[in-house]
Amino acid sequence: MSELSDEAGRFVRAHWGADCGVADFGPMEDGHAGLSFGFSVTRGTETIERVVLRLAPKGVRRSGNTDVYRQAPLLRALGRAEVPVPPVLHAQSTEDWFGTPFVMTRLLPGRTMIIWEPAPEFDGIVGECWLKSARALAQIHRFDWRADLADWEAPRDMRAEIDRWSGILERTDDEDWKALGRRVAAMLAERPMAESPVGLFHGDFQPGNVLFENGEIRAILDWELSGIGPQLLDIGWLMMMGDPEAWDPVWGAKGVPPVGELADAYQDAMGARFDGIPYWEALSCFIFGVISCLNVKLHRTGRRPDPMWDEIASSVPYLFGRAERLLSN
Image (cartoon, rainbow, N blue to C red; front, side, top):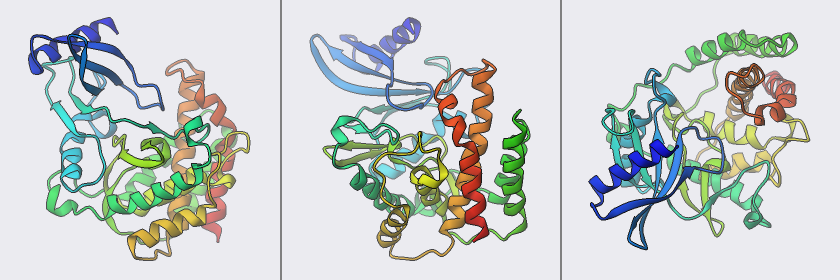
């Protein structure tokens, strides 16, 4: 950590001025956003900027969520379109600084709402923050990616994505979980994919990735999983995160409105109705169920310790069960 802080200091002196320094360097607190650090740029006793530094993991192929730099053109384009995102201060695809590509954004005031344990400042407004998030999603989905990001990424083949997640499911050691997930994978393979508008999707859209200040949305954060593809996956993901039927009751989101209200708020903001939303929630349940299987294994084998996954583990059968029920209707 001290080496990284020292490198941040050298970067600040090179880009803000030789009389500037770094204070309060440390990992970002809320969420599980990976290699994200916050610090203050100072000049004497004055703080002149608050910064978030996101780093690509070293020694890993740059692809998808490990290709941190790909977020820079996305965030800049979204900012020009007045979608609320953190302004990009600096970004680099090479390894000249920090030994890895990076994106540096302004740290905006506010706080994300951790859905399982909202902070006291969300008392009395949790439900409204969920609904505001659903409405904000429509602004993301109306973004004209063909005009502003035509060369950023080719549209994803979601059928291939389903096959990929089905393959990852096979790595889990829990045979009961594997059997439940295989049943859902078979249902997804057998039925046609529900229609969806194609465009920019966030990939992990939920209030824990939304920055609120005094109950209002200040920015949408954490674009690591974003891409071009079926956009209804985002509203399905938001509903999955809040759906009490998808979670062990001891771990469910607190204060969430009925998920049908989230779908209505999104569709009202889009000015359109979408019959296939239950399918996309089912797919979200399947994907997060597989993610949970993988991360529980990584935690319990000591390869990537994170006690949160021990708490989520009991929800794996609920996630697969909810997916199966949605696909059966």
